[in-house]
Image: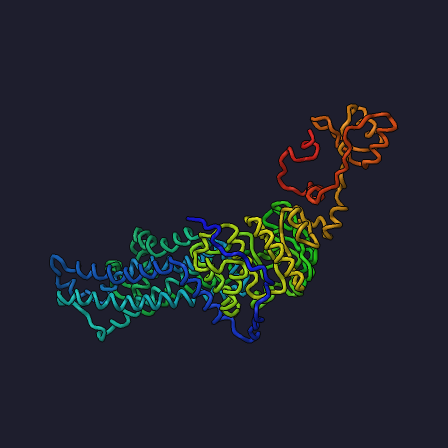
Length: 288
Length: 310
């Protein structure tokens, strides 16, 4: 990286006192909205945020379209046709989007530890749980908005493709709206889980490994267990619990019953809540 | 507002980084916080800022533990050892986030950027800044809330001579306005030109808490350099008088425990010719070295006085 020297202006030799006194906010002014504003500034002013959000959208739309285009090539059996969930299938891009929102949630806090800016943050706001809360609001809202929007886009594009095969679903069909909103909701809560894990682990590489392990690797490992264990454990893994809400995507486990939609979402929320609660406790106790 | 520590102690496992520190930093003057690298200066500052929790003891600012402050940037501004800035974020965005967290108006961000001379590069990623510019960004962050207390950790590191003069003037100006200014450094000479008061620590313990002038007097004092064709004889005579004498390779003697007039009179009484007789006052740096000699963690073998003289 190029180092700039000599291009900075000269420091002002004048006294450092502000030209006009800075009004101190009243003690009753709540911290929350100010911290959310600050965290939003931090989130939007690093490039990785926009890459992660772009990857979320691209993963949902492009991957979803590809899976829809490839479905049924070489013929569809009547049994397949009966169990096919066109809405969920068009949302199969969530698989890649999970990685993007996971990295976004992790980076929101680990980049602060990596650069040392966590010290500036916590010196400016010693109320550490409030800082974590503001980060959760900001990354959660960002991924929810981008997640829901790209989920709708993926659904529309996917159904347009499936319509050629006479398989499309409509938003008004039972459970379809839940699927589409569910994908966005799941991604937002997964991002919060990643934020909690990032706060606990602090290192970007370590926390990303934990998220990838939990979401992508663990289902494969559990799949190697005896089938009675498999049926007992797999529905409760974050990715599969999330798919209970979205529906049978391309990545749904074969021949297994998933949880009911909202029970599945409840499980994902419980993971995120547990990670954030642990993070709040540790963040308060640990040296910055 | 006063910074106060009382029996402040921080242990990391079996390592005692700060060991029962009690001191006070008063407003209206620049207080230098001195010690060799690894003495515990940065740890102490982190404890004062509530970033690390003390193992024992307390640190307060204006009588309150930092962690109890709400929007602390209005009371305390600090620069921290590491750059503490995301390299991809612009200087302006970095300061804006800090300002927003403390409800400091946005215009103050531009103001402090101008104050430290970074206004023209405010939109550039902080990762492209030189060390000196990063230091100035840290100072800008510390000044955001126009605080009554400033803690600066090694602010002179990486600054060009112009920047050093600037920060010196700035610190003195801040103190003259009645603010409490604590500046850490491992360079005594730097503090001699900036600080009124110095707190010296070594291995986490308080070694001295005194004015700069007093510190020089506390030190071991100066020495006398003597050159004589009969150096060995003179050295023997001086040692008999209780002075410490070292012989340099070029034959000059370094005498401690006797001043120049005493050395000159002794030589005259014994008819020893002197080619050179120079009294040398202890520099502040020497006083500092004397104070912290036993407190340096990893001392290279050749830096003891006897070693240097041989």
